[in-house]
Length: 264
Image 1 (cartoon, rainbow, N blue to C red):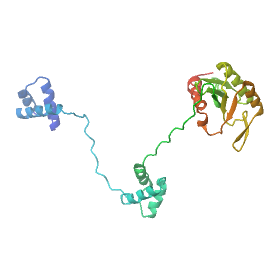
Image 2 (image 1 turned 90 degrees about the vertical axis):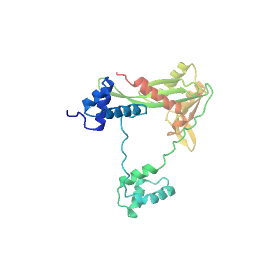
Image 3 (image 1 turned 180 degrees about the vertical axis):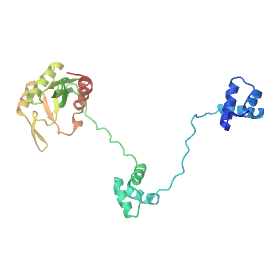
Image 4 (image 1 turned 90 degrees about the horizontal axis):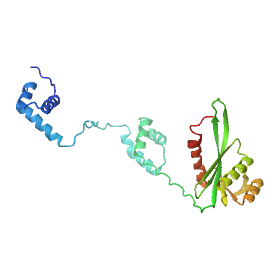
């Protein structure tokens, strides 16, 4: 009888499968063309290996490390990276070429990336806390609306956020001029049944005409509006989102929860 197995693994597998079907060791030996002692040895090894942790996939063979052209320059690279922590891989490559290095820029870049310590994330900036009714924040954000007819329109979203309670008010306008700003504020005040004592703004023209050093020159028309409702505007420089983070973050809700998934 021609054996149906070619390797020791196939022989063991067939012996185990027959044994699980209740076939005797004598019949297994006759079927596979081996001795009964061989069958008993295969089944004993199988029972022993089942008691230990086993992986269906064998461990991937590891290749022996190959030498690289940069190996003889590693000490030099380490010295440069210690002296100049922010040095780039391109600059190291140029310096190595002047020292006789004949390898590629990719090899240098990959090696520098593997040995450079990861940069520490910058800690989050601390934002001030305020009492109820003490501070609000307001800002604009533009959005392009595409109608089902194919026409597009640019709208301006006004945000007014109470810092302590994080209550938010939004309104959409076709312009972010002074009239739209004041109209949005009056709607927000009606919605909240009042206004905060102070409100932060960036350097938008309806609020701040210009800066003289560190002193903002407020728009007198908006100052008159603020005096009527008895709140004080506080101007912050553009490019400092942490000065009014609540209103900056609030536009995420407009984008994801209001405008997203709507058609006009």
